[in-house]
Length: 450
Image (cartoon, rainbow, N blue to C red; front, side):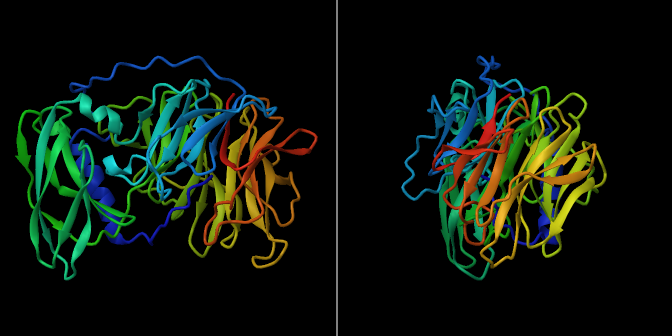
């Protein structure tokens, strides 16, 4: 299921914040992969490949399951295992690596020990070797590093009382902040992982209130794994931004993952990144992408490995599917475009790179014929072709079999209010003859391995 972000308009301040963070990470040696410190993680050896298998997210969003295309052998691959009575943790989109040895996904279940509200993760095809990709390492691995104490002096610079949380990179968890207007305080993190010495390993704090987050660059400090450090005083205020990593997709050789930060920043990280690696920007800084980007999909072949398909939306203007080459200074070629009232819900390459399938809403917005259907776009003809003709039902995220003959997709009778997510979807299969069959009920976010 595609994650629909609660995105405010991208103000000049947000753009400045992004630039400051990128420059700060670069100064800290973290634009791509930082120098090796005392990282205790050994290199991963991929488990045995699991070809022609469909991964999906079970209802509730807490676990990932596997099922064979004939509906047999339904079993759990991975679950976060956290107590989640309020259902605040969720797994979003899934993507197999081309070798069918690892599965990546985005999720919110480690937002209590990360700068971000959501991160990118991966797990082996046998359920082992779970790891966090963005802002690595994972929560459970932080204790493997030397531990220090970090004190962060804070001052509420707003005219209102503040009640929220702070996180510091490498800390075991969040710390609460409650301050009156102009109030001051000291936030202490007693267990913070020290990833290495010197300026290459500066760590920073994040201010959190409800769904909003701001990264406090002024808190940057070199953590001392044998003692305590105190940062500069940082301002406390109601955060106006957010930080989310989402929509992961693999490089053709399985060496790295491409994903989106926040609105439309195309980033990449190695499949096994070093601690605190922020990622490298895949596009020129001047690239003017649509305001919101989602449904990212890298080319599946050696010939298309530098090409990226994505769904982009400009508020109150148009929605479209674009094809862009890595490193481009522009948003790429719009292949299909729609009115702003329509939503692109699914996107998947043909395995041979000859075209792609997508799902998009259609029909009167408030009418009984409102639906979402599957279409095919072949690069040779550059013409969309209708694949399904559902009326009143919605097709969401989809994935294509390795032979290109079948599609697994979300299907539901309605969308979630004010969202592009399907309401209580099931997974269905569409074969080469156009026959549709129910694969598994109460499931979403399908990913078919090659």
